[in-house]
Length: 178
Image (spheres, rainbow, N blue to C red):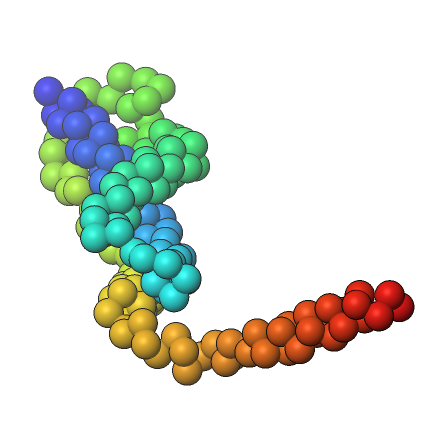
């Protein structure tokens, strides 16, 4: 049946919209995640020892991030009536796809034979640029030599000699019973 093909196209269109929404959110969140990971790697490297397999855990932590993006976008997905209206409008079907949800439209099958799957585009250049910059930051944080940490931090306090002088003064005062 032709309308079954329209329903199939509509479902495919809906899936593609949903996947694009998840992709968009996951891409943005991954950029933020990489910046946070870069800061964590930098702090751990300057204060301790970064485990050799840190990247494995970092990549593994992307799974819940993508799952959360899917969950958020699943809850925000458009209603089927909105998807029908968008699909109908993109195909210039004159409301036949919308009407098919409510009434029998087999009499107009010839009008709905050429329903196309609309193209979906998202201009993600800024999100990709942010992700690439965050990735560069993460790589630099991972590869920067630790010896540069001494340039950033204050020189250590040399209080050993002062402590020794104060200890000697305390000993003298104790000997004199003051």
